[in-house]
Image (cartoon, rainbow, N blue to C red; front, side):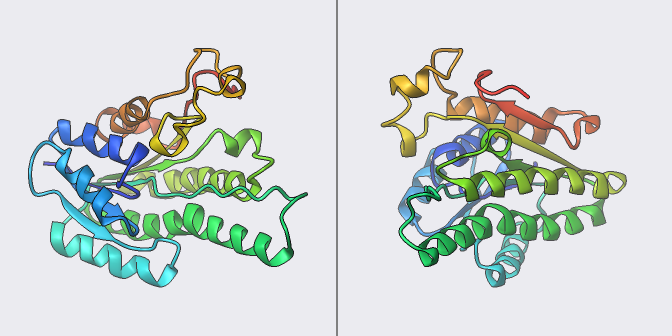
Length: 245
């Protein structure tokens, strides 16, 4: 049985990934930050048994190694990691109130969206390389390529995550660890439910709708369980042709 750690599993894309993987017989280590109730809802939605919850603030560098050690203590081994946890905070550079506010948002965004996955990937890849097998999927965004004028730190964090993942794909290929990046556009999660039918959003969607969490989850599951090793380093867009590169 494969054992996979999914960060940010308490809702949205993370929950959909966990549900889809569980349907394939995977045992899940479900990370959440603070919403235990939402994390429990995810666990109850999963087929199979022995899934476990783990809490950590992945923006805190001091918390990541103890978090990883606890997952390894409970699970014994981790075959794959999905770096899904992330935040999106708007901070338009022309209108943010002051430098302190701007700086705090930038630091928190980079710490959560890039430094957290980078630190966790280091621990995971080194551990997996000892066994000669493992996979990592980083959840990025189309914003990494086109920019986010009202949330520039978010776009920057995702662009950094892309380059980091591809660097790790090259660094660990010979040791049996593959790394993939999945880059969605708009996704119909609970967090953005009020916006996904907005005419301005839909005008940018050739499909006439945004992606579903399940569609993103299917791509992630493919990378984790089915993709050939030669796909390592790939960045897979899931944006309905709303942004092409």
